[in-house]
Image 1 (cartoon, one colour):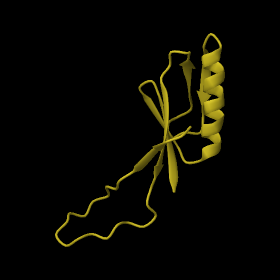
Image 2 (cartoon, rainbow, N blue to C red):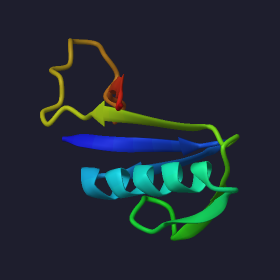
Image 3 (tube, rainbow, N blue to C red):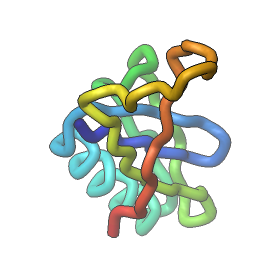
Image 4 (cartoon, rainbow, N blue to C red):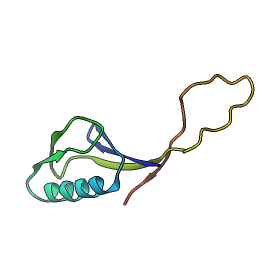
Length: 91
């Protein structure tokens, strides 16, 4: 399963579907090419919000692959809910 983390300045939004991320990318590019504009973010893990985006806004998108099956635990390891993400950038 893949999840998408979108960082806009210091804010992080998480999506579980690529379509809203592609739409967000389109809106961010459009806002950054104009004099700046508010971009609505409605389908993320956070409550719906608007973010003001300009050409100076820092935006980063990462994809994380979550393993479908938990890794086998070695004897003596603590059981916890932690797991590792594999990150790679979207273009």
